[in-house]
Image 1: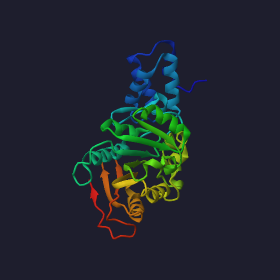
Image 2 (image 1 turned 135 degrees about the horizontal axis):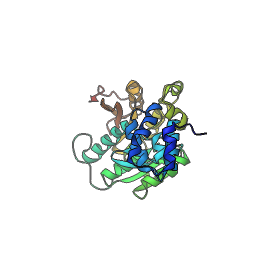
Image 3 (image 1 turned 45 degrees about the horizontal axis):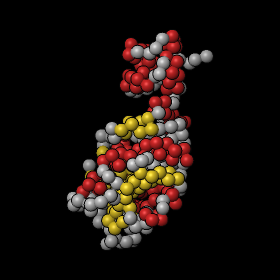
Image 4 (image 1 turned 180 degrees about the vertical axis):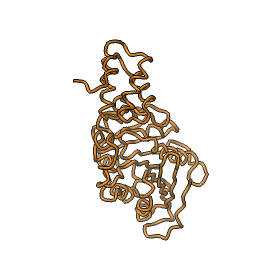
Length: 297
């Protein structure tokens, strides 16, 4: 038997129209959806018929992420394909795109970067949202990589033909020909501490694979691996950008410093987003004394 409220079940008797907005909104609000009216409008717009509508509403009421129901997520003004089992891109990750785009356009010091098509790698790409958004900003030689074959298949729908999507564990996925040539790495790796996953919203912990969330005991295992391994891949003056959380910033910065990268922190309070930017500069070596950490706001 359907778990939907009676007013939504009745929708199966006719083709859904905009007049159904209030009843769908009521069902979603009753399930705890904060943006119930916006979600109801999106579901109504996507419904093929009344039966499809009822199915989508029932899945949303049961806790399935809206993006997986619709088959796409809005990110940087784009519709990014998502599928069950793939990490859903969050709005806060748009900061990662903005910072990478600024570096590709102007460099880190305000000088324009060299002409041509810089090599950009979206590591731990998931749906491919970050790489696709960067490719929409500038003509780049784009590579995206993920260890999960489900994510790779999903990312290929978004990234190709603008770039290549590869399967493998971090740098193992990349062709050797990229060593020493990458201008920008963008990384949204798992950074939730293992013991804290159980406190996440049900949408994430029940519908997204734990390995897309689990960053180890302190959440920074993958950050350390990326920082440690990136040196041989970056071009001189190249950049590594990693999304992190405000309280984990110090640990991510320490990983960058240990790898010989010159770090700075960018924070956007409005969307609660934090990105650590590391620059590979010929004057910096592992163990060198670095200047005090700077934070952009």
